[in-house]
Amino acid sequence: MIDRELPGIPLLPPSDPRECVTVEGYEVCFYPGFVRRLTLVDADGGETQAYDQKTPFVLPAGQDKPWPSSTIEVRGNGVDLMVQVNDPGQQIDRMEIVLKARNGNGRGPRLIVQDGPVLCPPYCPG
Image (cartoon, rainbow, N blue to C red; front, side, top):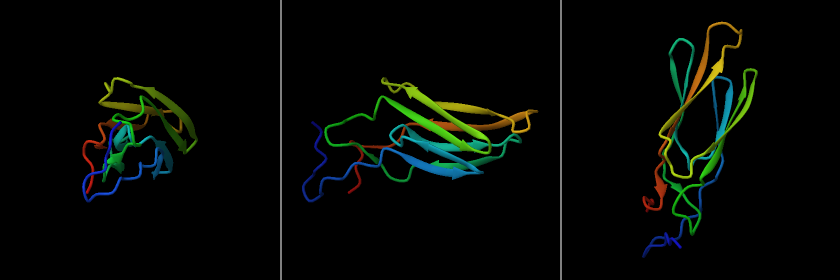
């Protein structure tokens, strides 16, 4: 069992296992134990950062790794999808979800999911 209680620092409550952000009319929900950064890239290559981890993700007591699987949900602008990711060996560094163009012609937006969040433990605030 992992004990995050250090002398003079109280045991930290676990982070919420679901985070949702809104970017350019899309709502994106994900497990922050898997995601460090989310970026939406429009058809012209313009990038909008939707999420950038600011504090360590606190794992539940007794866990020393994030969940082996997680879900990324994207809704809005005519999109309603869910991608299930199973990465028990933590081998994914980055993945892209490329959406179809809304009008059916040309390129659609891309959602870039960067893995590698800062986890507690071992990096706990205090």
